[in-house]
Image 1 (tube, rainbow, N blue to C red):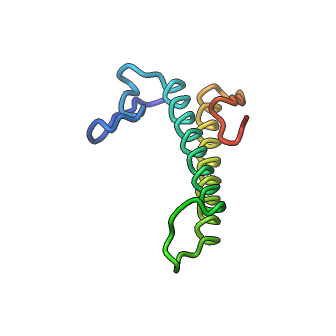
Image 2: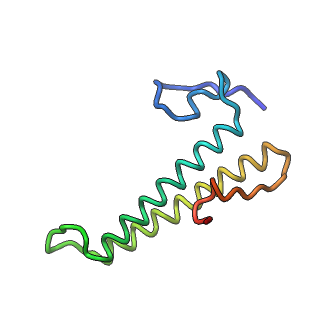
Length: 106
C-alpha cells in the first residue's frame, strides 16, 4: 500500500492527516460518521419540505425538491457503504457492519 500524500490546504478532513498522525481506519470511521450526521440532516430537511415547514416561492416544485433530497440521502448511504468497502479491503476482506458509522442504521 502506497503512502498517501495530501494535496492542497488544510480542509479539516481526516484525509489531510493520513500518513501524519491519523490511521486509515480512524479516518474512514471519522468520514463515515460525518456522512451519517449529514444524512440525518438531509432527512430532516426532506421532512420539513414534506410538512410545509419552510417558506418557499410559489413556483417551487416541492415534489421535485423532496425527490432530490431523497436521492441526496441515498447518495450518502452509498458513499458510506463504499467507505466501508475501503475498510473491508484494508482489513483483507473482513466485513464489518458498524451501526455508529452506517447511514440508515439505527
